[in-house]
Length: 397
Ligand SMILES: C[S@@+](CC[C@H](N)C(=O)[O-])C[C@H]1O[C@@H](n2cnc3c(N)ncnc32)[C@H](O)[C@@H]1O
Image (tube, rainbow, N blue to C red; front, top):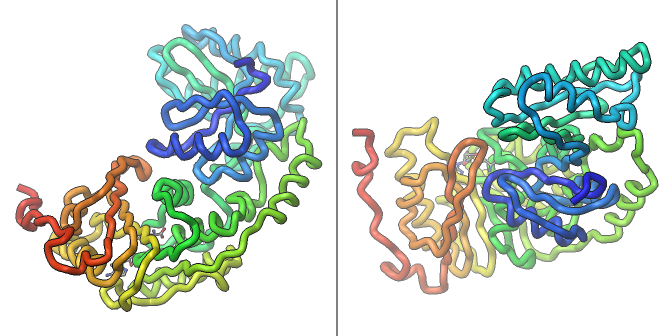
């Protein structure tokens, strides 16, 4: 693919396939899955569209140059040769990020500094002045990727990471990343036509992402800005049309989106976030331990992210997962339940036979996203139950 027309969407490990589906639905061609990303062909309009519509993308970057690199001199020369005046002028600010697996240039900070010097020196020589650096909110974020002996230079069209949707006011305890939350919902295969429940909703991320998906509200709806809006070639007409067109695509929904949490702090956080996303008429939340939720009848889906146990005693975690499994069996007939957890041992104590397990990462934490079918009749003892290992089995030896 030539540099004029290819883009890379970055995501979290395990979400590449769902992201590729999203990008394909937006009209991209020549889609190729890479590690923690998707490469595809697309023009400026598609780049805006992916930023605005992809629920599982962290960033959309646009490669502008690629060259072989042996050492710091060849990195400097290669970066300096790029026609930076096409992308930057001296009144603009920029920042350089670097990711490296290059054997000779293993210090990403140093490689970023060298690249920055090359850009600045080119401007100084040609124009006598230079654009300034701004690492927190630059007009142009430049991405240097050094692999083995090659350097790819890209422009970051998103600016800040796309998980920053713009609705979050409060984090609460260990909130899920919004991109991961959306990825879980899309992976679950929810039909977007039956009840959605998170019985340990924390700050409400899964509920909000589910509601936005169901309403067909773009994940970029609440964002204040995208990186590409400050680019020299920004076309506001294309972007405004895209936003207006999204208004016409909104859907109505006729099922429940409901969250519970036993913590008063979680209630405050989820209430604030839901209100900030103007979804308070659609999402119901209730302060309740999951143990006390009234019996419900499916069809419906439960997607939840119970505590992982970093702040809890092993026995407490085991009994929490065990009670949760019991609750699923006894109160959610006809539902499908999905649980994400980094505590792979605790997951076994749910005591139900998983029908699917997906390996994912929550940041650096390896997790499993596990599916349990709560068939009608599973209330009867033994139907879907599997023996749980004894809690002693997982005590540190
Ligand atoms: C990892 S957090 C969930 C984070 C959430 N997904 C978010 O994005 O903010 C786990 C939540 O489970 C809640 N919790 C723990 N035990 C519970 C119980 N027995 N009933 C209901 N909620 C519980 C905690 O209060 C906490 O908010």
